[in-house]
Length: 237
Image 1 (cartoon, rainbow, N blue to C red):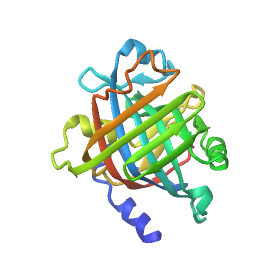
Image 2 (cartoon, rainbow, N blue to C red):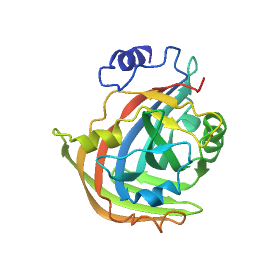
Image 3 (tube, rainbow, N blue to C red):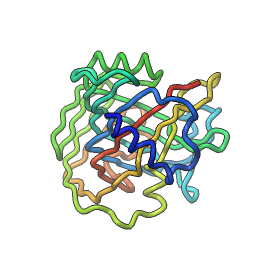
């Protein structure tokens, strides 16, 4: 594990700013990741994001993304992963923001598979985790939550060797902001660049009760698959 973490830390030429000058706090892996990206009107997105955060855009376009993946090996520095608590499926709904000109992500929703890890993640991270029924296989994702339903069938194609600016803008994000106007310091993360693959959506059925009026979740503007990344993260100061 120490060798893996040193490998992550030593690869930093792609970062948009320097890593925090203190010890990392979390290790985790985001594996078998499906990104679904949707354009949204600025006026609609502004209703969903706290006023202290600036909306980030790519060439004047604003986006919200569904990100479905499996969390593995999560543990705090100087501890070790514990199977039930360290490995679970997760789906988040995120958008793209800036604060003091530092780009990051803001979560509109986070849903996770296992009840106790969900509660622990919410308490330790301060992020909006909720428990949901999530089932997945290599090319299938199903989620049934209190206010959301997701069913995705997909196949993975070749690696995308010609990433465009929008691909990098949507995926290479190295901090996240919480819904806390009194503490606007972001949570910092670091990992190697994403390897992104083409994929084909065979079936897509997504409903978010709170957000359906703003987005047609069954028709993404862009989508990617990634085998995943190994991640270190820092707590807020």
